[in-house]
Image 1: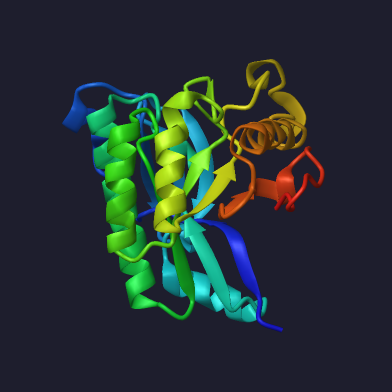
Image 2: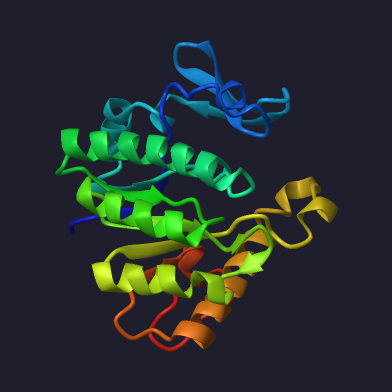
Length: 235
């Protein structure tokens, strides 16, 4: 059986000093505290997550894929890298950096990896511009969050972008992001366990009611999260 894992995140081994480049903070950096491990740290010093070499080294990842009989991985960035809150032009620069990294990996290992790009969703015109570039550099779609600075995916400001995805036949992977009530449920992995499925269901509802399903290559984190199985499939 040919096995494809569509939900796999990867980031570059070295991340620029965006705070220094843009003049304000909030961005993720990597602290490689030993050869096989790093800590994702916000540039204010707050720890986000510990990761291992398989999060940035495609050779390590391919070895693990072989061990688990995975033929192809669909790569996308870690959602905390979205940077939707940043100034639009700065968000575009971050997206281009991440997308170029993905394209390099896909180009080097075309039989093992497929790439989904990142867009500066805070600006639709820039997102369409980067969507076009993603297609040019060999990515097959994009990953987006379930909301953009509290704007849901049914906001009319996104219509033109989703139409462009449809026209260019670029897939859209909707990943939960900034879950509702996250600040009130920090213990016991609650932001991830009930929070992510709920956020995914919300994003899916807006796609379902505002855009329908015909001719759209859309898939949602966790098989549709808490939504269930709407017409046309939910995952």
